[in-house]
Length: 138
View 1 (spheres, rainbow, N blue to C red):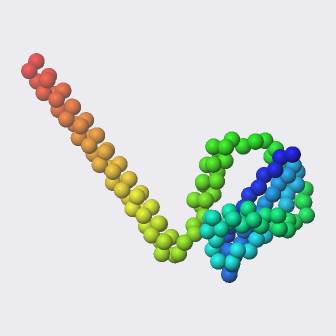
View 2 (cartoon, rainbow, N blue to C red; view 1 turned 60 degrees about the vertical axis):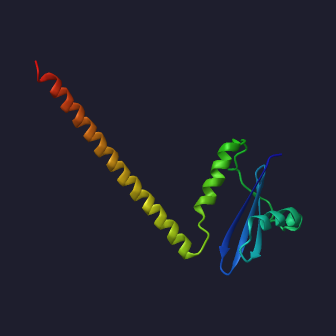
View 3 (cartoon, helix red, strand yellow; view 1 turned 90 degrees about the vertical axis):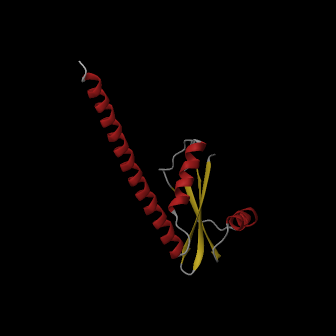
């Protein structure tokens, strides 16, 4: 029997809520957990360790589309990292600062690329000039 679990924590006004999904063979079960204030990672972990047995899961729903193949651990790690990065938790000021930082980063890259192109053109002209000077004496 192959089991797969996933916990998604999100803000549902006015509380933080977690949706725990559990899939076994061709069945899906869900459980909704209300945390209240924003839970820390260690609080979620403690909750799962201590309260998992008390969770009331929905009746199993048939789902024929669940993949039964094993996912490469590194690929799973990348997928989890991507999902975590997509979620933007924080104040509006923090999100605005993050966005501004990304814009400055893109601008720096653009300027750096232009400087490299200019330097490349300058080096090319210097090489051409040297070639011409070598051939002047003949």
